[in-house]
Each structure stands twice: as C-alpha cells, then as structure tokens.
Image (cartoon, rainbow, N blue to C red):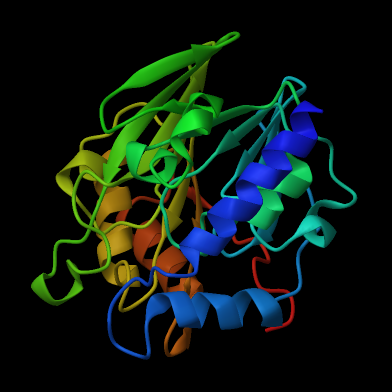
Length: 270
C-alpha cells in the first residue's frame, strides 16, 4: 500500500513538473534533456573502484553499489533503464530539472525502505502531506544513513549568461563518505570555489557541458585544484553535442599525471 500511495503521489508530481522549464526560451535545457532521454540508450557496464561498484546509466544518472548499499543518483529514463539493477537503498536527487528529477522513474524504482535525499527545491515539488518522504539536505548540510555520511555541496553557474540555469542554493552536489573514503558528485555546476576547495576526494564525478555547466578547460582546472584520486567525466552532452572528454583527460594529466581520469560510456548510442 505504501508503494501504491507513493506512486500516486509521484504521478501528481510529474503533472506539476510539466509546467516548469529551465528557461523561458523555446530551446531550453529541459527540451534538450527530454530529447536526450528518449534518444539515449542506457549503459549496463559496472566498474568496481576501491570496492565501489559504479554503473553509468545515462548522462547524469548513475548507480553506486558501496558495501552492498545501492545508491541511485538522479534516476531518470523510466523503469526500463533500471530493469536489471539492484533495488535502491538510497536515492540522491541533485536538482529540479528533468535530467535529474523524473517522477515516473522514481516511482518505478522506489521501495518502502528506500531513503530519498534531495534539496528543498526538489522536496517543494511534492504535495505538503507527503513531504516527509524526503530527507532535505541543503548546501553544507549533512545526514547519516547507516555508516554513510552524505553532505550537500553547492552547485551553481558563475557566468552571467548562465545564471538562469542554476542559481546558487537551489541544487546540491554531494560528498558521500564512509570509512575515510569520499565520493564527490558535482551535479550541474561550474568550477565554483566550493568545488575547488574540496579535500581528500577519492572518486569524483564532474560535469562539463555548454551552455549549462562548464567547459572542459574549466572542469580540468577545478580538478587540478582539488586533486581527486580518480575522476569520471559525466553529464557532458550539451546543445552542440558531446564535450571533448579526451581533451579533459589530457589537460588533467598534463597538469597532474597522478590523477586517474576514467572515461565511461554515458551515451552508448553516440
């Protein structure tokens, strides 16, 4: 009964979400993302790094399997995208846009014991009587789930012309920590001071797509500042196609050969 009620709830959310766009222009990121989701096949390849299973689904969506705790990050793409995956213990949602928050997909993968973590802007899309389903984390706040500490990290645009996409304080990146192992998920952001000042990151997922986030050059510059042990470029499709992640890798390794840049297949039909 709980799952039926939650599915009904999320159906209402889906209807309400259709009234919102990322910008008022016809060629908005929302429209581009909707096109992308329908055109992009999902990846089912899982890579294990430092005991953490990493499965790229598509674009901004991924699964972490960390000590048998399964975390879905920004699940979109419908039930079909997750049909062969383990059920989520935790769902992390970074922002309100359609490539991060999709009510139908959340309804399809949600289980009664699943913990949903999201910023207040995401929670505010829920009807008031159901808002207790979400644990709200805003920037610089943290929560514990079992042995994991999860902290909200700022994500926003710096360029004046891009501030309409992601204003400061609305969305979250995340740092997930367990037993001194730290994973950073950037969400949609530019090379902000909060990213550059991160410390002791073992694995980082860093976005790079124009006009919505940042260039590969700025992404590489930020990575060279906070120096994760391993970095995965993700969320790299923009209006002009895929960003040059090979160039990103070269720039990072020219600056610091000790940083391992790992390229996964986030867009298998490209």
